[in-house]
Image (cartoon, helix red, strand yellow):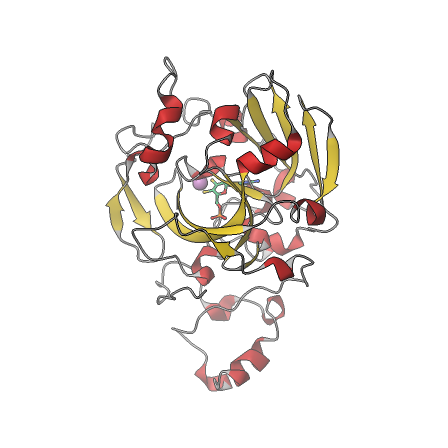
Length: 322
Ligand SMILES: Nc1nc2c(c(=O)[nH]1)N[C@H]1C(S)=C(S)[C@@H](COP(=O)(O)O)O[C@H]1N2
Ligand SMILES: [Mo]
């Protein structure tokens, strides 16, 4: 599979020259291979990938493409998506890609517990081989009114739920990110109630769109996207799509996410995308497409209403859209 690459808009990422040489895989050799001389460095050159250590799951990529997930717009180029991130464990700005390389993704155990038949802990490298991976093209709409499109690889969340064997009393799935302030400097910031928590209802987890992500752009997930395991819930605002998951619990009580804990008047449990329900401090009617800079109208449920609107038919008295 190949992904179209567009010219990088100048506002998207800081100048290539501002990045220390050491952060890149032997950049000079790659440039030499491309026939780009030392004097040829400059604007228009695609940003090279940050170094990643050899990944024990690399053989699983590329995965089968699930053609039922299509997009109405181009994919965001990897270089742009990989350098414009929200990952508060590594800073509150968008340029955390380099800092996030401090995330140690092996060994990485996932604890599965709460209201399940039998709680268990499983190495990510074993878990990832239990369910066949597939690639889906998804939209992603951040609550901050920017959007991207990305080829995620992973497994339907419902398959993982089946593996966990929840009890009938389980009403929610609660996800938890790692907690290690030595590895993630942002977690020393006591203004945030670490670790990052998010959750969905059991019904939402059973919807085919809810996806557990292990890779993107036909490779294992890079650290800044939340390696080795994150969630993608494309009909909800991006903050619901929790990164670098360590713990998955099946619970009876509705989980309170990190953002809801900080500011419940602005960030709620449901957080479904709706252009007609403004954030208390800004409109949600439009979104800036990350790779073009264009502003386009935001769609109800981020364009996935057909798949998910039914989940909310019986829900009343709830703030479904914040
Ligand atoms: N653990 C963790 N998960 C997180 C976040 C975070 O700060 N920490 N940010 C969220 C927000 S606000 C968005 S928009 C997406 C961004 O994902 P991306 O950087 O891979 O595009 O991750 C979400 N998941
Ligand atoms: Mo976001």
